[in-house]
Image 1: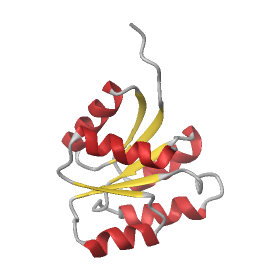
Image 2: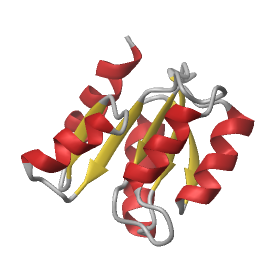
Image 3: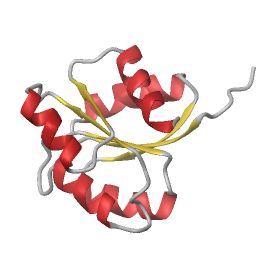
Image 4: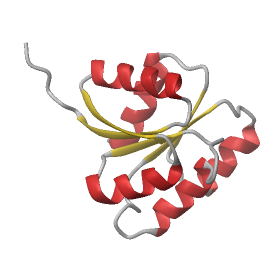
Length: 125
């Protein structure tokens, strides 16, 4: 049985358990996954590896997911890559702020595999 890859997703998450869970869900669903444990690493990998979608946490040391989102959208190489914010911040103001920073979708933790996949599929069509 061969798995058809649906695309490449860059996951940016400083919690290793969260990173592994998300990676597991996506690989099992046929995606190629690139992992980054921080925003600076994600900026480098996004430019070099050209992912189809970026899924990022918000609360991370150094640079937040919101700042990462802004940086990616300002960079000509990465500005067209859809971004899904995946955060425990679940207030409406957080969603609005994410969209103002250039995010294309927002998923709150805890999430189900279906919620994550639905958000990713909603931005790649």
